[in-house]
Image 1 (cartoon, rainbow, N blue to C red):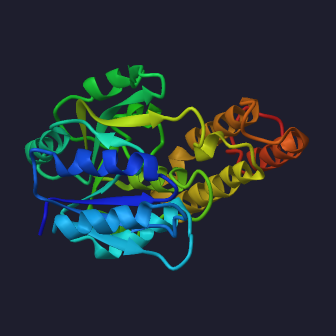
Image 2 (image 1 turned 180 degrees about the vertical axis):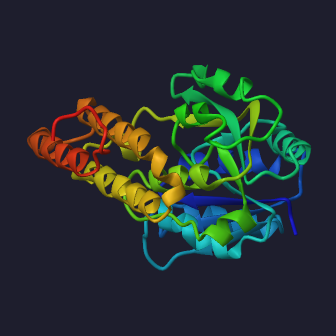
Length: 298
């Protein structure tokens, strides 16, 4: 079996897709499979995927019969994965040269942890590049594996799926899957990190996170941003089912409040007419999940 299964969901990214695929196929480390999922994209994504699959046997193109959204497109790719590790790469982002070799070497050094977290850089439409501002979190993690209990600072990093690789057997044994809706990374990343028995860090930029001038889902003004409330309900439900994680409830309660208020504060997220409703629903959920000893009024 290959070392990595890269799962790349594709929807309306024909202008970026070739650069993404080329960044993978040009890696010096070649022991991988690339499972590209055409999420019923109305542009030329499907044809591009078929072209790459025809010329490189490591590429497999899946064409979904209907559009299901980013999270469920990733789910559609997972049953086809045979690699030791799952790597979810968004189709407008790119790997840096040598990234897979560096990740593979670190996995070997760490004796195959459940999760490996690596660094990234934001690349902007105007040509600028900026490294993750919390890069020191990875540097300070050290060479040994850890859990969120022994190194909780790992949770300070962006709660996204694409700055990590995941041992496939760990994911399958825990039954992790992506829910529908916006912010689908939240109810994946928290449960995965809270459940992992061995996490390792790699202090190296392995991915370029594209910052588009326009067209990003999360920068689109829409009521779909209310989805964040359902996603945190899924996180709390996960913790509720696992008493050993109960001590994380105060942290998650605070994180939920901060995240929702951040969405509310951004001018391009919620329609102005919906902001009051979003605040009320956030306050209701904040009270509903308040830990017994939390210093907030009910």
